[in-house]
Length: 82
Image (cartoon, rainbow, N blue to C red; front, side, top):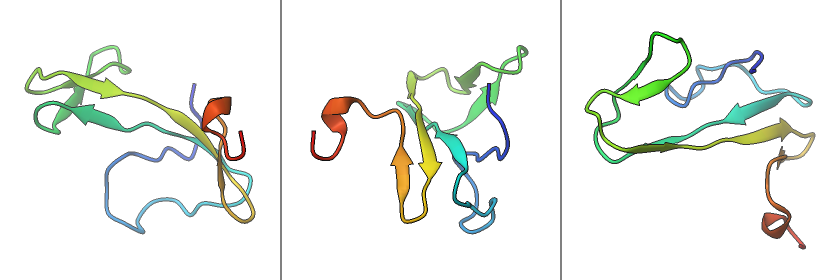
């Protein structure tokens, strides 16, 4: 479902892949009611909190433009000038 570059939502600043015009990737923040520690289930896809706390995981698809990023998954009501 996803293609490279894989960009995790954690890590050291300036250590990930260099973003270039034309790249498209998913931004998938996860907000946890408890601790930030998570694990990937045996299915290799599902992610759970270690402490069992509630969490929300959402996604936006972003294209890297010449001058600025473009969020492709914004609803029309969230777009500039709408």
